[in-house]
Length: 152
Image 1: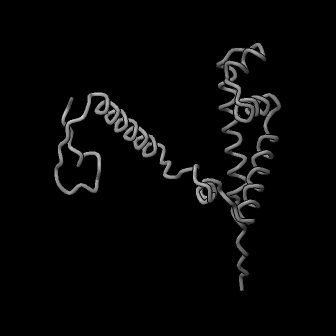
Image 2: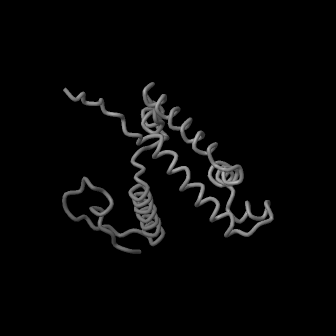
């Protein structure tokens, strides 16, 4: 038998209230506190301050991102531009980038299927990403031509 303070377990107790309880109860209370603390830390670390077990679907609506028509259109344009950038690459680079980023294949798996070294794949993907970056910069950052001033 152990003595516990009920104020530690029940927040509405304003003063200390000690009771003697069996060891099994103390162990269960300790396990509950540990699990509650672990759940709190998991929510804190993952910033998961929502619950999906409520029946009114409010939490579900918070978790599921509802995009505006403008955001949907912008994402569609961005995706189209990304595919255009990938299509501008040499065929091998495009296939390797597609396999790695879209199909989720590791660089080792790609090297094994193509029968080349992993460093070759790594270098090819890195060059491809740099080429995509150049393409996107050229696509997005083309300076608008300013009107010519007429010499009067």
